[in-house]
Length: 407
Image 1 (spheres, rainbow, N blue to C red):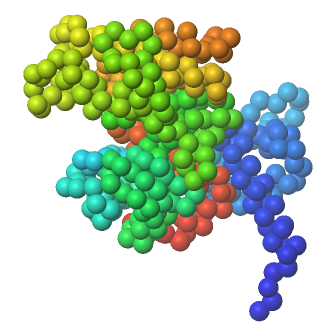
Image 2: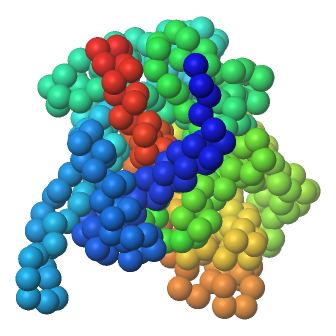
Image 3: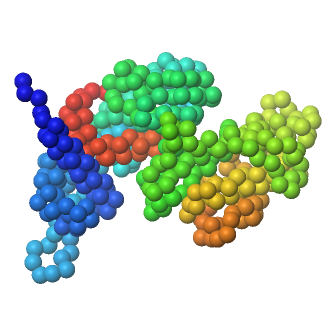
């Protein structure tokens, strides 16, 4: 059997890249004519026709509408993505369970399933994800689409390219080849992502980040997380290590009740850190006091707790100011369960942020509190998977054929 020449491989590679560019341009524009597509991508009309024909035949791209022509003559046909061509599964892994969302290729949720877990062992989590897949996969039949893959997000340092979890203290995982393990057990391609990165991807895909070239997602809860979008793309860093802002150092500025030593943001602002500081300030607090209990004390007007949350807001605002000085975003989105205390955090946060930002970097900066629930994190994981399949133009078509009937 004669092997393809290197020139044939080169032509195939160029065609694949051009086809991917076509899909991304259609997705970015919503609907676009072949003529405008050719102009945007600097390709000939004939090349655009050749590239889009198999995508239309395969069902991923459709002739969506008739456009308006600037001149007399035939009106242009607008192309759009058929987002219901296939389905993806998005999963958020937490220490008490998983939440899974079945979505189309535009991360529009079709169904959601929660599955509790008894422990955070790798085998236990895989079993829960498999169960969620079995529950949700039949939903694709009603839509006439196939389940082509999944995105899974979890806390910790995740090597997105390798599909491995390098280190997740919350789950107790170290160097786990999780994508391969899921594929072997469930039979679907899997993309693994850090949970805050997936939330940032969700905002870039369908949330507050749409239309922003550079924005940050800062989450507060058990820890302090950071998602970075630069040039419209997630910045993960080498092997997925970017965004561990919770492990940077901070010193309270003008603190009311916080001690003045330098420590990490997570130790200072995470749920456990806040509770530990409250116990130091108010000896005799109940042993079972949790983050919700601390919030209830703030709502009841407990002055020391209000001062503590004021200091926490000031610390977070100062840290975000440093991030604004480095990345110059146009938007900062605050999320996570720790934003239950937003009313007490935000006044000091805004003041510290304004004070910390350099020059005019803070002018026009949007600050938004994200009120999405856990299902949005799962939807973000689905968005990561959908984006990958759309970027790799031939993937949705080939995987659809290969996995027809599988779940």
